[in-house]
Length: 262
Image 1 (tube, helix red, strand yellow):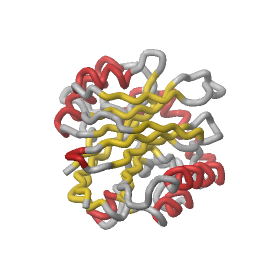
Image 2 (tube, one colour; image 1 turned 180 degrees about the vertical axis):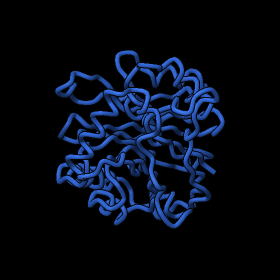
Image 3 (spheres, one colour; image 1 turned 90 degrees about the vertical axis):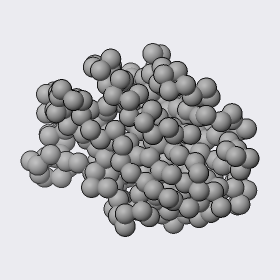
Image 4 (cartoon, rainbow, N blue to C red; image 1 turned 120 degrees about the horizontal axis):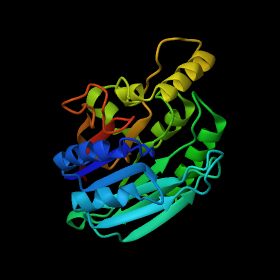
């Protein structure tokens, strides 16, 4: 059995001192073997701090390719209890986005664990589709019998073409267990604590979706290759702090899966 987790930990450092404790508590409870993080803030390297707290000795950090128009520096990271046999990085060629993978050998069985943070746009977008095709071509260079887990913040809801493309080659662990994707993974009520962000999201939702109702949807996934059996998949980090209804670990929920390599 291999336990994997994915979580976008949010690059913003406001309330990080409170949020990081919630992240550690939730992640420690999972006892995951492999954790994929998106939006690891740099140069502070919030992922390294989490790895230290969780006593996960192997860390592979990949910064985004550029800072973007807002000059925000962050990246993706994989935390592991197993040493890395191989590490690789993929430039996704737009918005400075990157993907990464490591090869590990839990109980002597080879496994590739891939993490990515893909093109942001509200709704389908050809740039995201191109990034997913780049990812599939990249992973397709690996031996066909090598088990692959591909996780991350795909920034696309289940009805988008990018997710349909992923499903042509991989199985969604959550949908395999529950018959459908979760109702939503983002945003959590954490966004209500920042009125400026809430206002921006409401305005964007009005322009794009022509709705005043707050948008929420599933953007985060755990995909597995056909040779992997999904024992369980669940939302995690989806509860607020005991003293607050809006203080959540992140603006995304996490996903955890228990997998068997066959």
